[in-house]
Amino acid sequence: MLPDIRSLTRDELAARFTEWAQPGYRVDQLLSWLYARRAVSWESMSNLPKSLRTQLSSAFALRPLELAGRQGAVDTTQKFLWRLADGALIESVLIPASPALYGEASDRHTLCVSTQVGCAYGCKFCASGLDGWKRHLQPDEIVEQVLATERIASAAPSSTPAAAADEKSVVTSESANAESRVVNNLVIMGMGEPLANYDNLIKALRILNAPWGGGIGARKITISTSGLAPQIRRLASEPLQFRLAISLHGATDATRNRIMPINRKYPLAELTAAIEDYQRRRDRLITFEYILIAGVNDAVSETAPLAALAKRLHAKVNLIPYNKVDGLPWQRPSESVQDAFLAALEKLDVTATLRREKGHDIDAACGQLRLRKMSELANQ
Ligand code: SAH
Ligand code: SF4
Image (cartoon, rainbow, N blue to C red; front, side):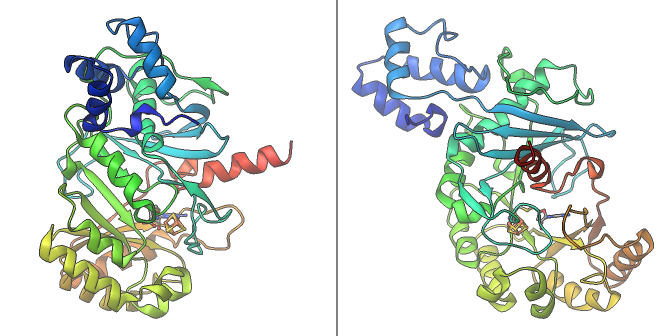
């Protein structure tokens, strides 16, 4: 299979164009088609000579994601289910403007993207790992989630709740320019463990960040990890400063071991040492994600170790009430339990937010829409 052209950086494309004896300005013309206009066909690139378009199409693919399903919530959070070229399914979630969740200024739209098909880490509460791990996403498959979402969102009147699923459609409308950019904030919190697909992720993020590419500021990109300690250290040496969120969900090894198998490989002592190393070289401001799961990690007694960790690592805590997953026994605690947990944390001088999940009514937790679609397909 030919590599998709959206997996290449500007330097890689420029080197190819030099080999082909193409003038330098052609690279910028091509990049403008790919990222400002989000082109989905070579034919549409009308200011490139036909011979160059033919040469490009014999060296590279241009594979738009196929929309396999779409759900919209009452608050206009929208979820997209994409079918990849090999038939695998992944998800992205578009969340409308919300006040700063990760320390950024209030945004236009946040997009949550996937990095793998399935997940190998098997957290007990999560739908993404239920069906195991299939493969890493290529850089273009990460980049295309942003472009494909923007094609849809800029074609539709903004903030219109999503229509019913457009089965098998490929969104072909190419909007005019970067002005119609929809996504200005990216969270790497969809299906998969981003730091397990490290090289492809970083390449995709370089493309999404570049002025010639997605133009999304590095400080507006948050990578969430379940705690891959060595890769957290590696992230500290990247030239781009992304934001880091740690899916903690438990502030003691006992609690984390119960729900997150990764903790047996990298227990809290090792994880926190890696975070401290990261903070010495990079951003001190990190976020702890803490899903509240009834009877598992929602007791007020858990707030003392959580507060101690948060203070030591200068972390802000995002509390997220658990989203029920079909087939799993875990439950969301009552609102009074959620509020009591937040109040106890605040009393311990921790900066915390309780995020009543947007999109709760559309299976917004990662992996759920895909899971439902796969069981539908299996029952057909
Ligand atoms: N693998 C990475 C990123 C993807 S998961 C990670 O674990 O950080 C993104 C976030 O969604 C994580 O914090 C994860 O724990 C959380 N999550 C998974 N299932 C959930 C559910 N059912 N309800 C609420 N949050 C969930
Ligand atoms: Fe994988 Fe993250 Fe889900 Fe854990 S929470 S199974 S690491 S996607």
